[in-house]
Length: 274
Image 1 (cartoon, rainbow, N blue to C red):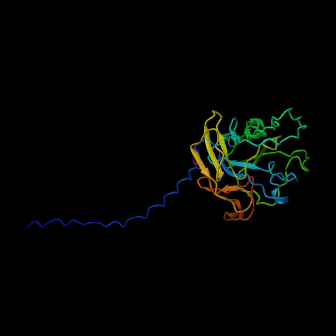
Image 2 (image 1 turned 30 degrees about the horizontal axis):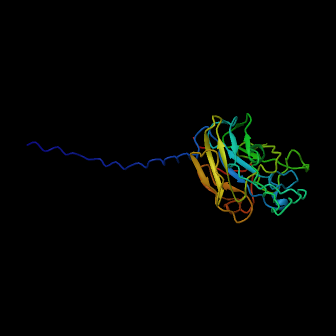
């Protein structure tokens, strides 16, 4: 008699699979563009407003825009452009004119026409900065100050000393790069009540636009990435919480920088995206 074969089934204990590596954080802008991370358009009063650390507080000169390289490769900033919104009209200050003789007869006297609004020249009223030949390493930050000082001479022309703010970690990215627009007109500045900052690439194509205020000024062109900054309760900058995150008032952000009005050159972020 032939006995049926006995089939032995071996139950293999499933082996635990290694945890998948977290996906790299994807930046809000594609390579090779930089990302705007902080904008100071509403400079605090008094000594707290000396954002560039030159010993003077300037409502326009201490404004700044901060950008970071959120990628894992160096990028060149040569030819990128920062601009604000389109021009608005400002009224001309009426000038005193000598009294005119009244006409003879019963004709009513001629009255001077009210002053007409004056359009400020683009060079005087627009913020515009073209980046020089600068290379940003992965995670490195560049800060561009307005630079206007009027007739006053800064106590420290180099601006090396900074007001109280968090320091760059020793094991962090390379030291931040500081640049100045060297603006000479008091009208070339961001508007506190409503404006924008536009980043354009060397080919003239818009990359990123940040607006603020109830009626922000429009840029010449709109970018693929458009963000509206939240309202700030106190004067200070708006800042980004990460290369793929949104904007918050600087004073209200979590962590070591909370409560500070701004932190040019300091941007806490995870490992640069690939």
